[in-house]
Image (cartoon, rainbow, N blue to C red; front, side, top):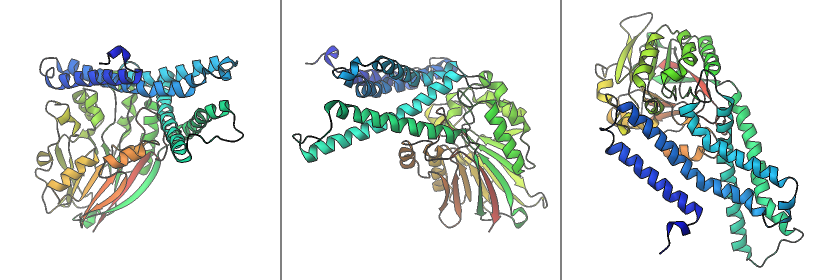
Length: 439
């Protein structure tokens, strides 16, 4: 029988990840009623970060072996550049692993350089793992098809050894640079016209500005939020809605960064619903109070009647539901309650629902097909390659406008900023300018 000491490092990391995951299950079941709520949620966040980091150890070992250890027995190990290269790779891996911990310990009005560097390394880490795996698979496929006895003519052993890591690193540096440049640009203004069944003709051309997934925290601060608010004000919306994941931090940690939200002003109101990340902060009540002080109304499984500026008898129902993550985390007093959110919403009137996750939009439409429009976020449009494919497969609606049935639409925002990694590859941050059309 093989002992734990005899296991390879990757297997040990996998076992450690299993232990941390088991401890998370204990926290979610046994400890949930035995610890003070704030302590329990902080512990859960810490366990999640440890779990991710232990899993990352498997990838880090692969990166080290593919870019450093592979050269130990070659002439490259004796070169002047090899020692600095080892230090660069080690620093890169340490920064990537430390990124998630900045959520707990390094949040302020503006991002710390360390946080930006750590999350940039995390993004590059994801890209590098992808290319090392892809090039390794291509190499193995070539060996299988061509036969192990086939030799590459004119290519030395040391050159063949270096080819895969050099190509992977070059591609990673190139894509990381492009991703950083894309994310540093202001969000695009995306104009979308959506027909809304039963919308009164007096409310035709009503302008709704949709924001989502701003993620105030380690890498998004006051300056970027002020830019977003300035762009929204220039659009002069009738209504502004924020569909979740406004923040990754507690109010006390990031209060000064939120001040630009106080400048948002829409004639028919500014509204907010929670995303999954609001519940990870364990500080939803304080966020609600802060937003109310800025005249931003949280829709906590509730609705409001949006009345026509020109004809008060004309109105539609704007409803919002809590994010479904509240149910997963057993967040007291919170959880998606569609029946409560749509109470007093007449079937004779148009209904617009704010729901952070596309899966919640799907569930809502299955339960209430009379909903005319759902506005969501959450997916980030995948945010960056190669995560786009996973985000596409995991969500019933990925990004953009979808028609469901005869007269229902779902719009999924790709996000107004980004989560953690300050990169965008294969996606673009946007502020969505929605024009509602009576049909």
